Image 1: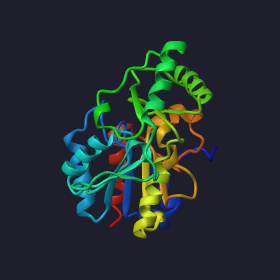
Image 2: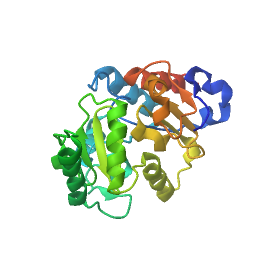
Image 3: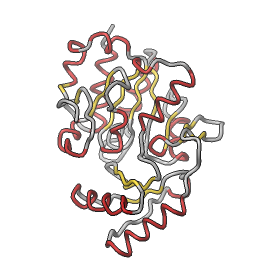
Amino acid sequence: MTARPRPLAEAARVDPRAWARVAIVATDVDGTLTDRGELRSPIVEVIARLIRAGVEVIPVSGRPAGEVLGLCRYLPGVTRGIAENGLLEVVPDRAPRWISGRPTDVERLLAVGDWLNADHQAGLQRTGDAFCRLGDVAYEREGRGEPELERLRERARERGVHLVWSNVHVHLAEQLPDKGEGLLQVLAQEGTDPTTVATIGDAPNDVGLFRPGRFGLTVGTRDVVDQLQQFDDLPQFVAQAREAAAFSELAEGLLARG
């Protein structure tokens, strides 16, 4: 595990070059852009202000391709996103593109979910957005705490399947979900320097956005501090605030660079 994150307020002083270079903010959605489960108008305005200042915003979400498409179409100035924990690139008016290079065996994942329910009393319920998912299989988290999620993760490993979670969903995937790897592949294909990217997230499925050496600046919401043991890698910095207020904290700092 990397060193404990420093306060985001110190980022400009601790790493001034990385701070000055940020041209893209790659952000988780649930628990990072949302506030108590809702995408509210103040965060939409913050995103618009970043875009007007020349900072691109890319949603990198565990949400399905269909929902990320909606975000890209309606959030002001947002022109693309990454869905299903790094599996798919989404651009309005184009078919979603597999970043991993191969589609998922959804039936196999569903069979593992059924096994967890039948043999391990998981009580997993498919998400209501299942109809617009192309890759992973997702279930409602429904308030499950880390001990129960860790138990289910170990059982899923017995079947060669990876289980990760966000603050709203539990995901089953054939390969370890890695939002950061998906983002890196998209950036490499267009020749964008990843050191110009700041990432921000809140939950264990965001760990790929925090991996050292990948991006110029990595930030966690305050929620990361409460679950440090769940992250193989930690962000460099942590916001003072939680949820959407943490994204705003990062955005306001970038907008004040002058």
